[in-house]
Image (cartoon, rainbow over all chains, first blue to last red; front, side, top):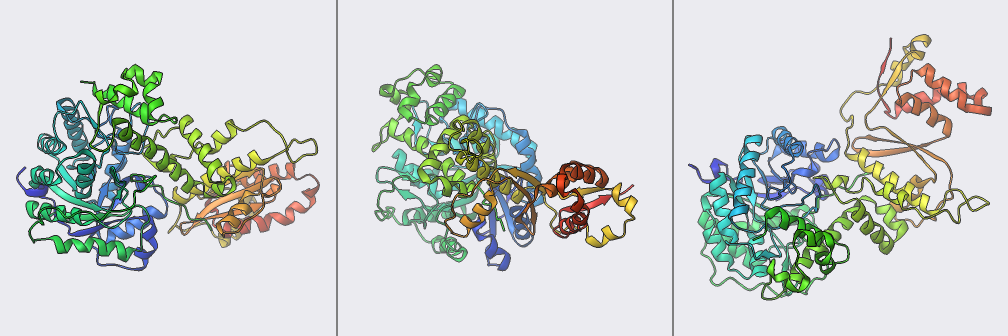
Length: 306
Length: 294
């Protein structure tokens, strides 16, 4: 890789496009730098979601973020799905296409969850091969995100940051560094998030994700239903320093506030660009343990009926 | 070291077991993949400082059902209202076991839900007829689910926004013999439904935050379509449905009218007077993309 971020542009501060904001975005043109879409919500749409996306794509840069590629699965790759992904990327001039380092199901099933993989040589070889196949098919680099996870396997032989680094180098793909996911997983798996951020290959980081999560007392769940907490902002500050900056995107998927609130949240990132890392990380304020917190993504689109 | 495919089959079987991860680990299917007991699970899944391996796996189990039931609630909000939370969730849970998602998109998650409700319909009792037969509460629920499923399909399926449609004036330029030999091309978003209950009225009332009573059964004929990205629905008498259904099946206007006349019974004498108005209304509502004339 010759250029940082695979030569992809730093788009600035963006927001995840959600259906509850469609009306607002058709009426207003807020000064958002770019939008990220959930690919699966639009690839088959012949209705309002696709229409709104086309309006947005005329005014803003768009990045596609998927939840069903299942790059870590041992099921065969779904080329029907990949074909639709490729067509959509062409139609909306997607700046890049991303998904998660995970599997979503086997034996033809889809759990619609971002399930973790054992981090070892066998899995690495398997995923590298599939990423190469996908990149050849899409004729563009794939950008992969570190998911939040809740289990680790005895079969794992390396930490996630090492796996991500080797995957990116061997498959020549980009990374979407979800800073909130690093934090959530660090609590769940008792590792140092600063070491993770310091160790991932910074030149490969095409994009950052930021989001809120839920503190369940004994663990954290990636709910995307709140503001970003201070320790995550501090990790973002470090990641921004080490990478030299990359496109930054805020995700808000449940209990979604009005668009200006979501936009204001990502604009807070400006406060964390440049200054030194607070050491140690600030403690997150205690929150009531949340029973029944559900990790996102959810991506069902609700129809409008007269 | 476990083979990756084996490990994934095992984990999927465990977290999708409706009785919990303990039952999942003990199940025959998961033991065929990895023969481990709940007591020995830390040979597969590591524990954290705060949680055991079982507790950690349980997060995925709970999330699987909670997430997908939430999606079904979003897809069938009026069925949820009719059933109440507890009953709806019980149906949804059972449905997900019989029809787990096999698609990359959540928009197809509920596509077999009406079918599932029909397959598991309890034996007839307390129907609307004098002998206890006839449509009853389960049929109402199946109809409601069918309506909501079709609303979702019309909402996000192919449409004709921005396209020129057949207009009423065009119809008036056709000579009678040309008109009778022609075929009307329906818009791709037009669907017809025959239901046993007027669930469309119930649906509309619930969406307006009202508390409607469950309606009495009555054969209900509906057309669903979409204009300006919003789903519209129209209720018709049976004869209009017969005519429209024939037109959608590709019959010529003459053949469709003939079928309608055959179904008209005592209304036959009044049919001719209706036809002009029906075609005019349907065209004005944007049911047709164009017309094929010989």
